[in-house]
Image (cartoon, rainbow, N blue to C red; front, side, top):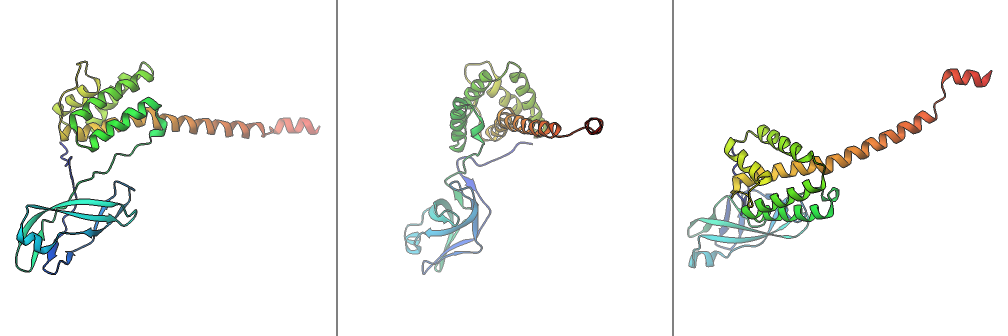
Length: 247
């Protein structure tokens, strides 16, 4: 099963939208999306909408719309195709297309500074839809991370990648492309497209989470458990010792 995603623009649920003759902007239901600025899934409130007269006089194929996020008030820019124009209203296509994509989130604070910097740039390439730049940055970031980890990490990463691809039911050709991007010996990684990038981003996030975030959290949890276990043991007096002290 191959995932298909929109990369340069993100499409949301269908909503019927009209621009009426009196310039009223009508939505059949409220529009909500995840905000790339604050991360909240909030309603989008219209701020700037096209004029009916302009649309009738110079009918474009697409129009731009400006909304604001109800949670943080940051502007949101969307685009819609013109579906139909009549004497009373202009109907816009129901699938509004977001110009800004939500940035990938990760717990970067657990990473070494140089690896963090590279991984942030890697995610930026993915967000921008620069597929092959994303592949190149994945290769570079993976090599930087492997250089800072123990000698067995590369083999663990290859095994973990194979397991993730198996769970995701990824076909052999795409699995080979993902593996070649991360672990290939060629000077340049293979060219990839949106489908391969959709899989690769999840593999990369899983690898870095397991090696840095999960490891750090698990070590901290064990250290805390052992500390309190030691404190508790020191305060416990055995029954036999208590009897001897009382004798």
